[in-house]
Amino acid sequence: MGYHAVYKLVRRKLRAKLKVPRPQHEKNDQAVAQFQAEFPALVQAAVAPDEPRPVVVWAFDQSRFGLRTIQRRRITSCGVKPRGICQYGYQNFWLYGAVAPATGDAFFYVLPMLNAEYMQLFLNALAEARPDTLNVLLLDNSRAHRAQTLVMPSNVVLLFQPAYAPEVNPSERVWEDLKTDLAWERYPSLPALQDHIVRLVEAYDAPTLHSLTAYPYFMNAVNALSP
Image 1 (cartoon, rainbow, N blue to C red):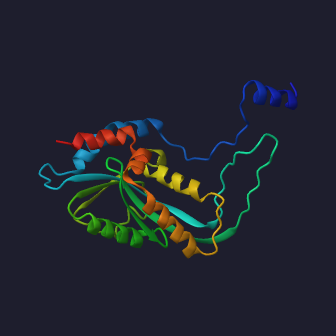
Image 2 (cartoon, rainbow, N blue to C red):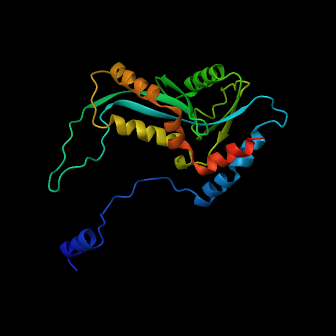
Image 3 (cartoon, rainbow, N blue to C red):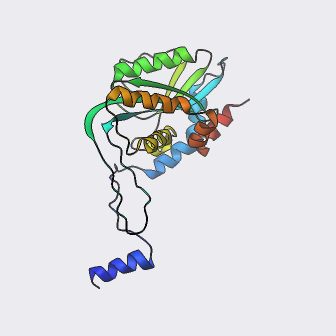
């Protein structure tokens, strides 16, 4: 069967497309499923039995934003090829963010880079902003997150997700939502982009963040903490 015959079969009959697979690290899907099943117990183990403070479980991550245009698909009429104007600036910064899926509470911090020094700054700021709760953070295994130089505030506990499994972290959906809003936008300077992103995160309300991040496995762990 020739190429054109195969193409017609795939596109018109099966209504499918030839796609390049998204590259990803090899990982153990069974380990991810096991982590999700055991997450309530992991959260319980991270909290002392006599802990007097309310416990808040956060999904934490960082994402890089820069002057290079974010590209997304566009809807057009049949036969019309969409066009998008891009810029290729290389300046960037990082948005650190923690979201509490159960309540929709959030804490964001704009910082110039991802390293242990700025991770410490974020942890200290979160601990100071939420002083009356024990804050349990789910996060990935970045070197900045596991740095030996980090000093944990007394009201912060870290829980690490499986390696190469960003899909288990609800905060990933916040970054996707933000970058969809930023798609095809161009900015004259990095401060202009920062100002726009600050306005976007300040506009989030609790119901929206809850809707984006309330993964069932995560909510099971939060509900298990309830008296």
